[in-house]
Every structure is written in C-alpha cells, then in structure tokens.
Length: 125
Image (cartoon, rainbow, N blue to C red):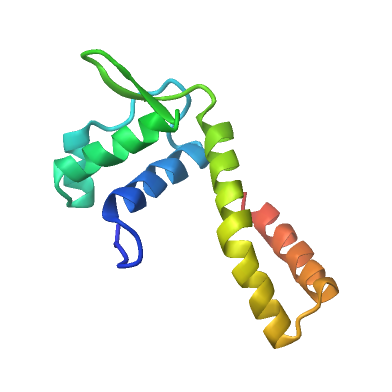
C-alpha cells in the first residue's frame, strides 16, 4: 500500500480496512488481521495500526472480543457506506460541481457517461 501526503497514515489505513469490508474480503463477525500482522503487511508502526483500529472501533465498524482481537461489526458495510456517502456529499461533490461549472459540463453529458460506466462496471463483477 502506498501512502499519500494529503491524509494522516492512520486514516489511510482505516480507509484500507473499510475497503476490505465493503469489497466483502473481510466479512461481518470475521476476525480482522492483528495489529502486528497488518503493521507488517503495510510496513508501518503497530501503533499507527492501533490508532486506525481505535478510530474504526469508535465508528462502530469493528469491535473487540477480549483476548481474541478485532472483528468486523455485523452492520459494518452499512455504517461505512453511510459515512463515506456523507463525506462525499459534503466534501467532494461541491468541488466536483465547481469543476463541472468551470468546464461547462452539463448534467445530461454526465448522466450518459455514468450510465456507460455502470454498464462496464457490472460486467467486471
């Protein structure tokens, strides 16, 4: 995993974990990699992974079982989707609309391209 300079590493790791859950690679009530294992895999300090896990636990995405580790919450996909959707609507969409306006892109052109994207994406899955 390559990290960027625009966001704290622990948040990028949290996004990685959320991606695994949303892509159904890590299923509800399944154990997630230990702090140490994920730190080795991502080549980061275990304290950074611990901070990510604590952040995700506060959001209800993962939970702990004493002495057993961290597990994916039953409704993790729903929570992640809601959090990411709100973030997109509040932060990314206004910037996107601004670019559309500046470039003279109309919604009908965007809709056509989005429909084409959905068709191609459906073929992949």
